[in-house]
Length: 292
Image 1 (cartoon, rainbow, N blue to C red):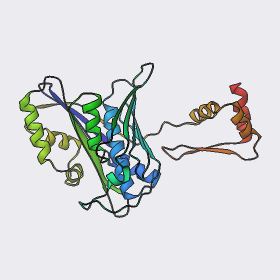
Image 2: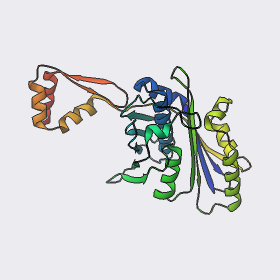
Image 3: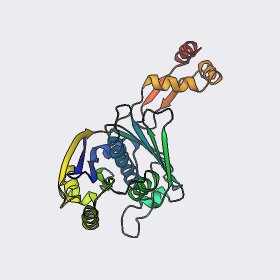
Image 4: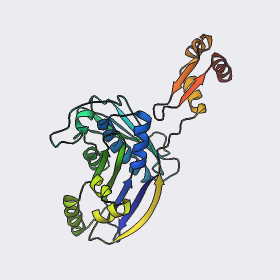
């Protein structure tokens, strides 16, 4: 199980959320059988989605991050509920490209930079909130930071990291988001800027044995904090046979008649968890009858 913690400065001027998402990203790699670079990319996006989901207020709320920079990985979609339980899918799970100039996995090269980050929040309104910003980095953390600054006018710092083992399993994954709240004192801002500039990477801190609490406290070192809450999070898909049935009905009567008259069963595969739902022609006939 992953873990998310949230802290606020005692004067209420800044907020931090930190996450150890190792288990979540490991499950994403197991399901999608991603190459190392794509694991790093989907791992960063699902970690961000998990934290942003945990920042929502109501049980029915959810957030979706869609990232498409026209790179070889294609579109990556990560969805989280209000508890931070998240799921992810990617167009091309296997992308083999050289390491970047720093000798690290080239997430930017896999994601691309010619595209848009969409943030869709379903928060119980008639229509979901949709924010969009151009991809500025392709490294994902910088793109999340830019989204908050441009679309939500909230000064933020986002850091994300995924460490992949030689056998393609996930050793560590996590991240944090710091946000300045209205009226934040210049002194607090100076301390946060100094801390962030000297802080180790997320995966280095996790490799050193630090947990989500340790990361949050280290990032806000020198500032009095109050812990708001903590929660365990996991890779969680909400697909079901009923949802798939509704999706089939939405394809239209003619399409369903074709499936019902076919001699072969129809298989629908969930893009997020790879679970397969099989419908025989008889199942489709019953579904068609109930829909009319």
